[in-house]
Image (cartoon, rainbow over the protein chains, first blue to last red):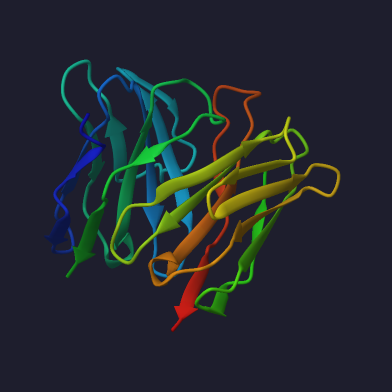
Length: 115
Length: 114
């Protein structure tokens, strides 16, 4: 059973470009979470999705950021018109059960660098 | 909302000695407390978790204790080895509302000294 797969592992963008980060959850997992991690800091919740549904996006900036988890295919975190402050590691986690009190399994992350 | 504090931010211990990392939480409704280990440049890995209906859980050299009254929980690593060097994150969560989320501490960088 493959783990949570994220790609790309590293992404370099210039200011103003778009960044698309992909996450394929573990097989059988229908709950996906996206987190952002700055150097020397913890994981900050961004968004929680189930298939075709955004359950909680309270941690995601309202502008430039969006997320989806379609019926088929990976979950996508999209950042439009990137700025230097978007540079961070973005991690995706998945769980087979609903609820924040269930174990989450993380992918290897995407390290986003903005030039 | 929930707030998780983690101490210390950095910890150095001699190989073979024990390491203890402590966390406090603010929401008395929190009922799930996972611990993650993150090596440099790698994914956070769940190493142990505990639920509020137990006070202690052990898995080989790793143990976690929970004091619900005081709202704090701790990670204990015994007989530390070089491969234990990493950043450790505690977290707390509850399941009351659909949009409840896991809240992470800021991490403890553990150095195992040879």
